Image: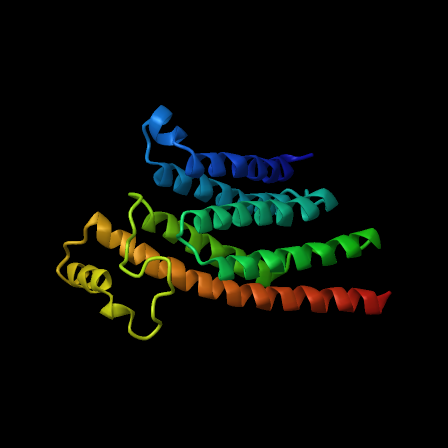
Length: 224
């Protein structure tokens, strides 16, 4: 164990805390803090450790096989837990979450098979891009649910891709933005729009990343 791996372990430990904060009244009842606000802070701190552990490992020459295995596992746990909670809160569509998490199972299986053969598949750049796209989507959707109310009238359904501005709440939020009088409800609407768009990007990058891992795995098997 070294500092980068401790940071990765800390990210794993933050996962159950995030779930408890969002699915129980603990935050408001005990801490007096809005659950979504605290969840955003916890999620952003956990995401920051994803950058720090890799950066420190390379800078301090502490890259290890344990870190190569733990880092993507920590990422998958954090993102999967957050997305499942967002589905429970009706802030994310289940179909998108199924695709994203399904990709994680496939990639984890490939990495396990490769590891059994003595090959460690490091996190690919496409996987990192996918991770950050998911982080943006998750934070934005947490903002959308900040006061516990539905931010748009067709809540729970996909916003129309071409005519989303025809949704009353969206038109009001855009008008408030132009007049520099953005309210907390408007920020919820913007969070919802960014979050749902971010999920589309996350699905696309998940499929792209999965393809990269499959190619890398196939190349290692061919080399053997």
